Length: 280
Image 1 (cartoon, rainbow, N blue to C red):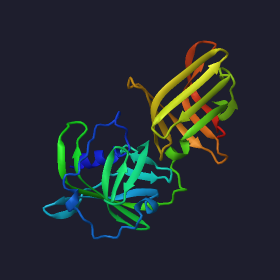
Image 2: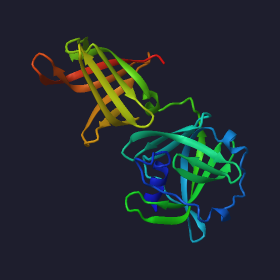
Image 3: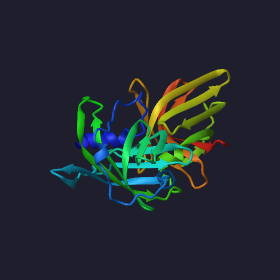
Image 4: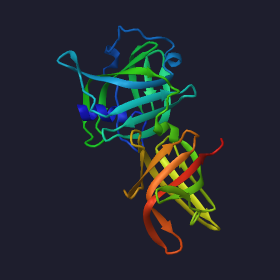
């Protein structure tokens, strides 16, 4: 069941073109909650929530379904009806996804993307969601039971590195480390270049030199602890770089190989691109 729980939470906001998890409500009419639910739910549920506990019903009793070490789930329900999901895998990489949310006030059900759950409890600081059915996206097996997840309200102004990266970043300067010092390096710098990190987990890199343009579309995840970003193409090919958002708001991208336009070869070393956030 642990695999099912992880898939339930990870796929809350995944579009149907990405995931195939289906849900049902075969027995929801019998799942009444005696806990406090602030109403209207839609008004009180907006904000950012972090999953703190996972449980399943076993032999008539709620038992803990341990969250794997390093795994994390947050959901941000915005007032415009969109929701941001952040799933951190045990390997430390965080993936963002965006969907829509809505509440059926009469039944107390919350729809997140393609999935609908029961709101079992909701107060100013905590939220409990429940569900009774899920289809494993790998095996297609329909799993039935009773599951519930407890979330704690977070300060929405506190952004992880993944959330801070979202947006368009314009290439400003490039540096190479020589004799232990960063030296500006304009050799091979394009006339125009930018990176675009989206909340749906996709990424675009663009560069233009004269009339020659290059665009690369991939998916992206980031380790918010180490600052390592991994970009993965549809072919499965991936690349990584370390990123830091500096105190002045610029984005530094560190990498170990650079293309030399004179020789046409890749050069190993220490390199850094500095990018500035595009004005909205």
